[in-house]
Length: 490
Image 1 (cartoon, rainbow, N blue to C red):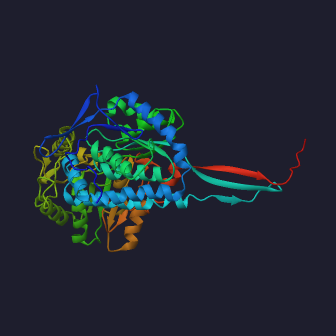
Image 2: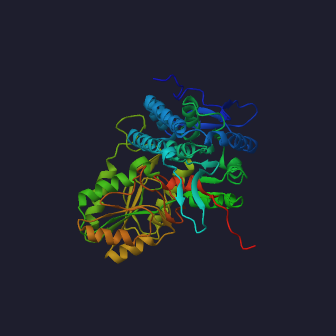
């Protein structure tokens, strides 16, 4: 096992630029707080706009020589970083628990998904093949090459910090780009500095990856509007994503956006009730509902409505809550007070509008009880907003057409699910819902590294995973070779 300091007390203080760990000096610090105990676990350097500029300059200097490396060199670095992750798996699971409130089941799922993404990324240097195209000009050869875009800026969120950083960083590096990463200020370790330590130890050349933690309000614009990056990959809220897109577009950089969701779990009259409830519990309450692809609304046919409400409420009321480091814990803490207060306000507003709390609705510190709301409607606060919490509003519907209309009555279109033993019915509903991803007889929280991942409408632009991420992180270059003298008209 490599001797790499990845434990929670490993001195996560410096930012990482051009292969160097830069001490705090006179910079402000970000207090990283365990959301369960509220203890400060680290004080991380808060980057400045000057730090962002220097990081981009370092990336620009390093990228050209990195792109010229043979594919096995680039793939080898990603593979070694993956081996280091495997060697220190338990340390990273603990880091996710104490920094992001991730219960074990969520932390392991996150790392397994990130592992798959790294494995997939390691194949990219060998699949960036060119093409020969015939020419309409006699004696001409056309070559279309796929080349790295250059420098990629990445702004990642706090909910699945390691995976949602790695899914952009690993493919970008493998494809021959250099990266500047700004992790969320709640999770600067697992979303940023951890990646720097892994890739540094794996032998990534100086400057190819640079990590600048900082508050979005202080350096977010500096990352998004800098003249250097050709792609700006952002995962987060729709509102902030639109701002990032405007900033990036000002420099003709491509915004690659995975934004908010308001995902439905449709339970038809032909559903297997037990399977639908199983999916509903997992899709609503994994990581306390803090996932862009979690269930935001349960749409249940009126013939099964009462049974579904009772079953979901019973299951939710019995989910173990507590310290995410305990193996039996399913429900850990919400990331911070502002997120908790917002989701509980959505519950209060929904109850005031006529919803009934079947279970939950209260909090103990940052532990929010799994909450099931019956008598809900599409326009209630907990349903029409992305509540991002352990909240399950259940809305009745009469027929397939109404289910589709309710599902589409949102600006979002990220993920969803449909339950029916009549596969033709399920497919008709799935086809009618305006969303980038939808899962039949399952729930919306699915992410596979070889399948394109992304949304429609206000849920984003572009796709992650598979060959789709290469479309975001590379560009094509046409090179023609005139092998015979050409006859010109003048």
